[in-house]
Length: 347
Image (cartoon, rainbow, N blue to C red; front, side):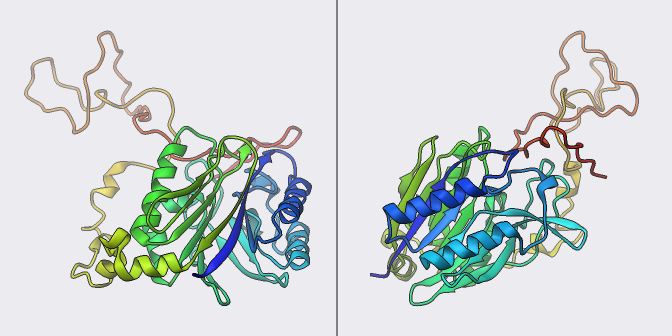
């Protein structure tokens, strides 16, 4: 057995004002109540919310307070993420702080939730780190997990636990819970997925084992999630298979196929290029409205995916392209800017 105690903090957070004092207070309280906790994980954008107007360079005063807390309590600390201002760009960045108060890594979210997380640049470097005598941990943020390549890369780098701060206040949280379970099972690792409440999300933080079973799922209110996991379960699962059955990491290692979709050649991405721009939805639908220039009964086929136009629908003017609303947005739009601040303008 290789025990390691992780405490998730699902906190009631403001999207407009600083949450720094509240987060620090809750970290102190968790370690007072559960002094055996060795690592604390907080949700995405917890400190200042989801407005890029709060972006600031790192290191910062807030990060320094978290460093002091980690050193005082001798814990590993992932205090969620910040909007980081660097080199004229904004990134969604999660620091990793060790028990000596050192920032050993800063992970930049690879998949900002576009088109909603506009103005945020993607990171390009994966983040894994070792806890001596315990194991290897990997970091991803929220929408990253919708792209299984990110998790597969982290475990291929040796990650046995995926730490996943998230900010989801939308109706697709149940889908994310399924993704978290699938990620744990297909990568034979623990998944620690911590959401906020209030402006910080709708809760339902989840901790999943390498077998894909839920060790704990939080409700919709503020909660502490202290839980001891056994890293040996990861190694045993990877040795003998999930419940003695599939061994997906070994199968991935021994594959005969190369995935040409990742080559980004015109041939491999031809279909993807037909999907249209990555843009916010608006009212209305393109279905059945474009390409229907023939008289009723004509043999001209409708374009793929088009539907019938309701009776009495006026034709679109030439060149008008009404956005498609057939797909639900998969994450949480950022909070609007606080009062008395100018709205952001992105090119």
